[in-house]
Length: 252
Image 1 (tube, rainbow, N blue to C red):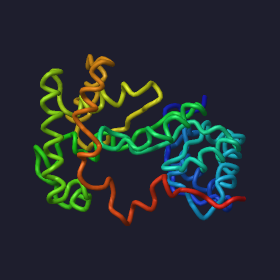
Image 2 (image 1 turned 90 degrees about the vertical axis):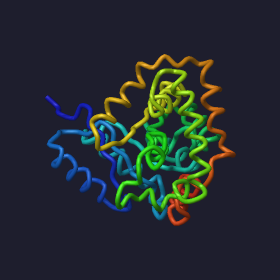
Image 3 (image 1 turned 45 degrees about the vertical axis):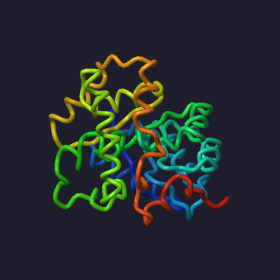
Image 4 (image 1 turned 180 degrees about the vertical axis):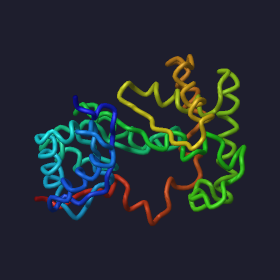
């Protein structure tokens, strides 16, 4: 019996050679499975034609080492070209109440091609979980370098948190539950992946599944977080160049 069910792996890999196969073999050994269900190229290597990358991953599918292919932070052009080589199953993108840029182009394209969205940082890098708002900045946290969590930006963004907190009281839930419920209502093809190191947060997040938020509530929740009132960029400038908008690869 194959032992790959439920295993998803994300790798940073260059596909200019058979390194992808080597990386996959290492993952299979570490996980002690015979195949991996969903295998991501974690961020696009902009120095390698996407056709080469997906071509190598396609071989892994044919060899039975992986079942489905995913991309992370890929541009419109990259997604289209990749999908022509082999169907892309999932696209990992940042998506939350205060980071909604993918709604304009990425989301419509993925729905046209049948690609699911794996939404990372669904709680806005912990902001809607109360980080730096109702609890102190963790020692050594990278959030200290995030524009939205710094100085005047943070003070402005706290107003947004308070607004959402008031709505959470109305819905008899916590702020993270409301933020996750909003995301889940964006479509069955949206899969949020909130990260935490605390069991209590996992339990709290799972509670969003039972929340009775209706479609008619969506506008009120969305309006509580106007994008033009969000202060600061979602990433440092040095990291911004790695986002999907710039993730084009050379033609093969």
